[in-house]
Length: 203
Image (cartoon, rainbow, N blue to C red):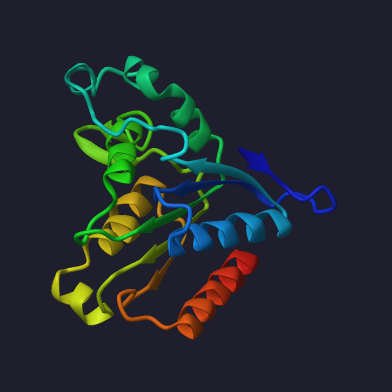
């Protein structure tokens, strides 16, 4: 679903990758703030709610065998490849579960970030493929504290700010995390939503 504010000249096209199944979740509130703020700020928003769209996250045997066969490898996920290649920016909105991505988001990266799409092999070396992406933001939540995430090496932060960032040609990046969700108070949650709003306005 795409949206923009008619009275504002678009800044570009942003793909919002959202990965939480529950509409009453705090992640859903973050997602709503992200989409509304970006649209009001002049972005053309492609809101990709992976759960609502019924994205199938499993890389099948056939897909894996044809993984390096360009350009045929994109056929099972062509609509998603076209959406990500049409974007100027990406905002990922997801919870951190077991110090990793939700399965549906991990599956998106497995199936859509393909050879010839997110990376190119040139003389055996990996080179960025999504150089159309000029900004990469992530809005995440953790059940534990920042210290606990640090003790576990914080894989999702590294995956966003290193692997995905490199695949996108090392654009401007920002990782906006809300920690300690198991104990956060209502004022802290509201303050975080305001932070997300400010970051999206400045994007």
